[in-house]
Structure formats: structure tokens, C-alpha cells
Amino acid sequence: MTRLFFFILTVTLVTFAAQAQKTPDPQYVPGMLIGNDTLPHLDLPSVDVFPKKSFKSKNEEQQYWRLVWRVKKVLPYAKEAAFLMKKYEMEVSPDARGKDRRVYVRKAEEELMKKYGSTLKNMSVNDGKVLIKLIDRETSKLSYDLIHELKGGVSAVFWQGVARLFGNNLKSHYDPWGEDRQIELIIQSIEMGII
Figure 1 (cartoon, one colour):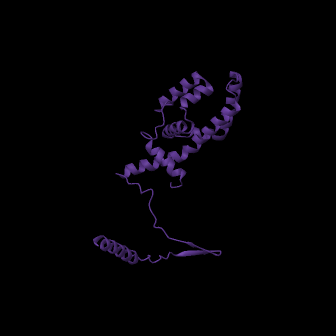
Figure 2: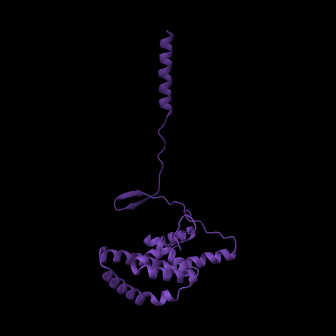
Figure 3: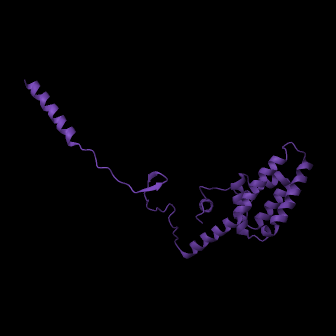
């Protein structure tokens, strides 16, 4: 008898619980009529993905914007260097004789000097430092190694000496997670159209 009582009590409670649950009221979302279809449309709040940069002092802000200006100025030249390096590697076979390689390099150098010579000659020392770093970033090769590969060891040593006289180093690596983090963030902002 008690079993029958508990069975009836359980069935009654389950029935009441099932009846107590109502289906929720439908939520209406604004929509847009496109052709014969109605598509839901929600306006999402805007979010600052890149918060405004804050500076400790006016001098720090000026240095930052000078670096932005330098990166914008020399980044196209570094990208052009990477493009020409790939073109060079495709056009000149690795087993080409030294004379054939030198002829091609001279032709490419004359073409570059005609196109960019005056601009490159008028760059400041700091522009040159950024350019050396960006060439390493774009080509994955040090500027010293590129000169050594294309023009030979004597030219590489000569240009390294000239660079050292002006406070540059053709053997400096690009470190996007350390020393050159700010330059990397600037490049990413430029490529995304933020700066």
C-alpha cells in the first residue's frame, strides 16, 4: 500500500512539474527585409581593439611618432629588397658562375640606384638603422649576409666598416619580441590601416 501511495505521489509531482514549465515567450529581434527574406539585425556596441597609446612624457610621444614616421618611410624599401631578393634567387641559378652572378647584380644595382638612389642617399643615420632592421625582418637575412652573398666578402667588410662609422651595424638582428617590439607593433598597425 505504501508503495502504491509513493508511486501515485511521484506520478502526480512529475505531472505538475511538467505542467508548470511553460514554453518561454519568443524573443523578437529587429530584422532587415532582403528580397523575400527577413534576416535578424543587431547593432553591436563598438569596442576599442587597439586602445589609445599613452605616453609618460611629451618627449616620449615625440620619439614614438618620429619612429612611426621612419618606419613608414623605410618599410617600402625593405619590402622592395625582399621582392628583389626573391626575383634574384629565381632568375640566377645557384650553380651560376661568378661572372654571370656579378653581371646580374650590377644590372640590378644600377636599376635600383636609378630608381631609389637619391632617396637612399638622403636618408638619415636613424633611418638607416631602421632600414637595416626591416631588411632583416622582410628577407630573414642580415644586411651583411646579403652584401656578402651578392657582392662578396670584401664589399661586405667595407660596408660594415662604413656602417660602424655612423653607429649602425649590418649584422644586427631584428627581434620582434624584444628590442624591436615597438617597431613590430608599428608595422602591424600600418598594415591594418590604423596608423
